[in-house]
Image (cartoon, rainbow, N blue to C red; front, side, top):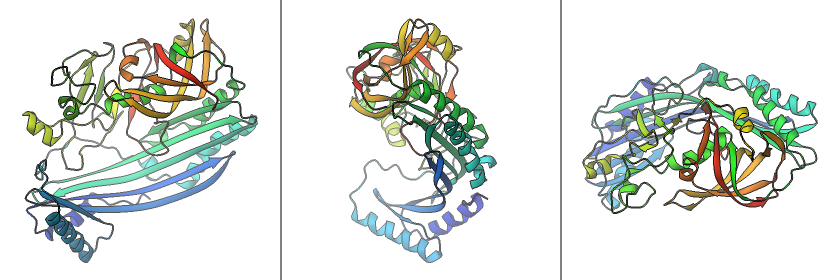
Amino acid sequence: MANFISREEAQRITERALSFSTADEARVNLSSSDTGNTRFAQNQMSTSGDATNAELSVTSALGNKVASATTNIFTDEALRRVVETSEQLARLVPENEEYMGELGAQDYPENDAYYESTGELAPERRAAAIAAVTEQAAAQSLLSTGFLIHEAASDAVATTNGLFASATRTRAYFTTTVRTADGTGSGWAGASAHDFDDLDTRAMGARAVEKALRSRSPRAVEPGRWTVVMEPTTVGNMVNLMVNQMGARSADEGRSFFSAPGGGNKIGEQFIDSRVNIHSDPGDPRILSPTFNGEGLPNQRMVWVEDGVLQNLNYSRYWADRQGVSPTGFPAGWYMSGGNSTLDEMIASTERGLLLTRFWYIRGVDPRTILYTGLTRDGTFLIEDGEISHPEKNFRWNESPIFMLNNIEMMGEPVRISASESSGLTNSVVVPPLKVRDFTFTSLSDAI
């Protein structure tokens, strides 16, 4: 049974902590989680473990002098001590001119992000999910590795101004890499979900096995600008780079792609293909993002991009106050609409191009154009005359999601992905596969 702090217990603990406060204002953040994970390598489980954690942080404000202290002990003495420590630290720090004070009571959107299938997930079921992959790999004389992690967690925020917010959630993540014994072929598959029942590890294993077998003995083709068929994970990796830069402050201060020439930002401008729509919504069952942030500020449905037009940027409380607007919701999980083309149809429509499975080692190059570099990995294939002809060596790419989203030829049905560079739990990202022209590859990579 999942072991995390309930709403009632969170309210009792946070109220008790705040009762010791002598600061002008104070806030308590309380988080707890019950996490389980299982790793596997060479077609057998290698480690399995479970961990239960809880942490309380107190933020105390003496005027605009603000500091925090943290504890994982919730006795009265420990709570009194951590409150006193935060107040002592607040007396020592410089004034924070951007401190906005603590929020009072708020209204929060409905959000049921807890699923029993994940919260009550037993080690035996984790083992069965992994066996669905390892058995397929072993049957083909391939080597499978991977990671499964799941979490049941709660978060609470309370302030001396009468705010209390609490929410529970579950999340699960699974990835596998399957390789050939000769080391020349590699395939990958992965997904994430709030509901563990939504993770079909057998289907993921089949995809990874098929890619590993097809990717043996890759050839080399020239780098350059290519038409690419991008599986959803690669699309999510790229678009996430753009969504993460949708901060109003950096745009208004002239530090981001979303800065307008001469000052201000690009809200209201079309900047990508008119078929692109991106929204976040804690009440959307496909996303189920958090309903509040660490200050207790409510999240809300936000349309960030509509028909290729920038509709909103993320305003914090401080920056919204400076600009005379209301603070916004935040994209801790987002959905990008798509089309009705399948991957097979995208491939069939391509005279010469590349099929991309996922990206790796993604690093920034130029924040003003959101230009990044990275590598393809675990299944890169040449498409000729509408068919996959043979595997290719991997590439280093230099590309911006802005350029990519201006070069769309076809879009598929959105699906929820896992962030391929992460080995842990991530925000919900739902994206379609895309066919894109003129994707820039700069060199070859011998890594598989």
